[in-house]
Each structure stands twice: as structure tokens, then as C-alpha cells.
Image 1: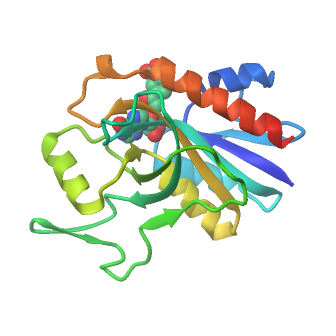
Image 2 (image 1 turned 120 degrees about the horizontal axis):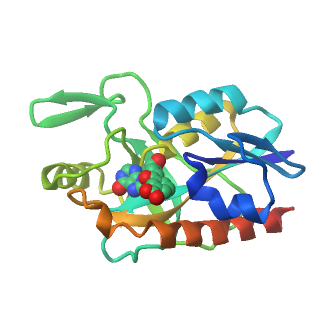
Length: 207
Ligand SMILES: O=C(O)c1cccc(C(=O)CC[C@H]2O[C@@H](n3cnc4c(=O)[nH]cnc43)[C@H](O)[C@@H]2O)c1
């Protein structure tokens, strides 16, 4: 059985590629693990996993960077996202929000599942098509879901793994705070370095 490593962009796993001497490519097979680059967002992620996920994998690990709603978490901190919600999936009803569960169309909330002991702080994520960038949206999301982090893929990975009953983890490093957009404040280099250090140690120790 193999592990499938999943990330949205190659840049997020740049040091991982170097460390394991992996060829350039969006789907890379190696002896002990395979690596899938999905593209950004939940649609691209679901499509890529629909093509590549199978029962030859016993674990899927989604690595990426994320925004944090919590300013007490330092930029660059690596987190274990154990639950994730498709936050925009539902219907507005005036100022209220009805989830797809409220509408009777199934779940919008998914969880990690793994036998591995992960020595990282736990966090609750949301998955968005649109990066949150206004005080009004932040206030609404915090009131409705009280998330710690935001990504554009996490819940889609959990969703796909649940369909196949395959264990999954989501490990993300905080690159920015969720705030009105100002990319100058993002610490992408630091977050990618910390994420890759953790990913290299974890995948290296598994094999
Ligand atoms: O600009 C760069 O150098 C760069 C290098 C690597 C990756 C990026 C990305 O922008 C990755 C997009 C990826 O990041 C996640 N993400 C990060 N922060 C947030 C956020 O505040 N809200 C939602 N998603 C976020 C997301 O999962 C994207 O796939 C840039």
C-alpha cells in the first residue's frame, strides 16, 4: 500500500520535490509514495482525485499553505487540520445561511481520519472558492463557523477520501492572516519552508 501526497501547486512542495529527487510533473510515482498536484481550488482537486485516487493508497496527505483567522497563531506555524467545511455550499436566506445539510442535500463538513500520531496543533478549517478579503465576510464566517484556517482545497480532499474510505490527513502551514487582501503581509517563503520540512520528515519516516 502507498501514500498519496496531494498539493494544489508545485511551489508549495518545492523542497519536497528536491529532497526526494522527484521529476517535474503533476503526477509522480515513486517506490513508497505518489505525488499529485491538483491545481488550485476544490473543483480542480476533486477532478484530479477522481482520476487518480484508488485503493492502492491507504493514506492521502494533503499539504498546503493556508490563511489563519486566529492572529495568535504565528505565520509559518504548521497545523493539523482535522475538520473542514465547504463554507459557501448552501443557500442564502436573507441574512441567514442554509447549508446543504439544512437543504437536505447531504454533508458539508468532513474530517481527517488516520492511525498516525501527528505532533502538531489541531485546527478547524474551511474551504472556499473565493479567498476571504473583507471585514464583513470575516465576521460572518467567524460567527457562523468559527474556523481557524481557510484553504481552497481541504474539504475536497476529505470528501474524496471519504467516498473511498481511505485515511486522510491535511497538514497546512499558515502563510497569511485572513484580512482585506495585502499580499505584502504574506510569509509564503517561511510557510513553504516549514511545511516542506515537516512533509519531508513525515514521509521520510514512513518509508
Ligand atoms: O505567490 C507565490 O509565491 C505563491 C507560491 C506558492 C503558492 C501560492 C499560493 O497562492 C497558493 C494558493 C493556495 O494557498 C492556499 N491559501 C493560502 N492562503 C489562503 C487564504 O487566506 N485563503 C484561502 N486559501 C489560501 C489555498 O489553498 C490555495 O490553493 C503563491
